Image (tube, rainbow, N blue to C red):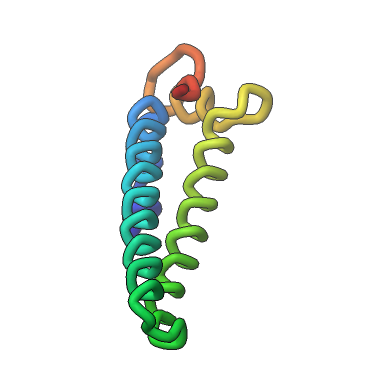
Length: 100
């Protein structure tokens, strides 16, 4: 996410799919860490020794929330940034659609 300061250099039609891809990666990383925590706890390791992993989960949750909100700011049909942003890049058309 370090490249967020440069994100406006890309049109929203490219940014939104990249952000959605990032959400998928965050979910996978969160699942992996959660599984590690669950397995470790099941083996009897005290939770105290998993503080670093729990901190990593909190950071992933924060980043996920930020990315979801950022996508909403771009794609909201009422107030979204996509139309003006696309126009800046010489593009027209509706904002990127939500994937189902």
